[in-house]
Amino acid sequence: MWPYFPDLLATPVPRYTSFPTAAEFDGTIGPAAMGEALASVSADQPVSLYLHIPYCEELCWYCGCNTGAANRTQRVQAYLQRLIEEIGQVAVALGGRGRVRRIAWGGGSPNALDPGDFDTVMAHLARAFRLDDPVVSVEVDPRGFAKPWADALRRNRVTRVSLGVQTFAPEIQAAIGRVQPHVMIEAAVALLRAAGVTSLNFDLMYGLPGQNVRTLAATLDAATAMAPERLAVFGYAHVPHLIARQRRIDASALPDAVARFAQAEFAYQRLTRDGFVPVGFDHFAVPQDALAVAAASGTLRRNFQGFTEDQADVLIGLGASAISQFPAWLLQNEKNAGRYHLRIANGQFAVERGWARSAADQAIGRAIEHLLCQGRATLARLPGRGVVAERLARYVAAGLARWEGEALAIDPHGLPYARAIAAALDPYRVASATRFSSAI
Image (tube, rainbow, N blue to C red):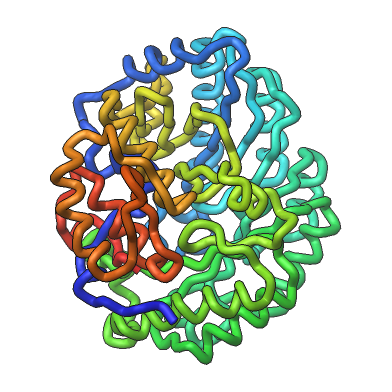
């Protein structure tokens, strides 16, 4: 049983898919920084690409992604043209340097595009970059997913797909604006397997309106019956003051903090009982999957895609709101599609804000990543170690973490507190419920 200390979970904290987090990004950082960052890439350095598609066929009420309705063909086609132009700009700046080993499509919903458009952009990537037999992954919305899209995935050798499932309970689907019957998800899975997808992830959520352990158990049973290789089980973050569409969700029906904690614990216990390997604090994978292998071998990483076995230190984000990660830079493109268009049309990189990472930032970032991925980090040379130790004292006193010489280790039953413990290392963190999500 996980121990429950509500005071240690009371403060919202970042998910730490980067450090510093996007909340700290500086608006004075602009297009020139991308040129400098790309110039730092060496000849054979591993590079990963992320392409953001900010459109969905239907908008879900809970979603905080940068996305809009794909109901105007002209608007979507104009965006794709700019995306292709951005690909060309980045490729010219790289000058043939870097080897692309991973390509990830996210959004939004990439399958809101026409399958032929997916083919076109993939062909441009192949011409623009040095592709080194990359692993290609795509986020898929089962609503509207049909054989033409499955055929496009096969043509482009996509082997990994993340399927947006969230919940199988019809009444909860209706409460969050994402109605997708069980048979629809089954049909999508069958198409994906036939298309050659060998690593399938289901995104699931707890803490949804009207959800309880019973309905969560039914969702986990339905999900595991379809044999995905990976499961991500996220806590729903209700921040209607930031995400207007969430105002359609009945806040009075949301589980309280105790119920959320119980749901998170139940998911962990059920999935590990059923043979899934826990990966970080909210991912699970079958033992033979690359993500589980990375967790077992101590090579697990964390970036803007969450927990990953990707070892590349350079992740180039393409498209509106996409974030690029370099050892010394974090750079985010314009979120607004109109301003993104203007930047690219004027021959500029689309970067609108970001962060120049100092040596101290990089050291703290590595320590946070190690804590979240391996459950242990050496803090001997961490800037402000004395202050950090004071912040960590209450977690150590509660038996959730322990000092092993100069290293801090999170105990197994301290897993639900991992993000809160990591936040103790963050000198930029502001304890504000308006900026971050619930600690669990």
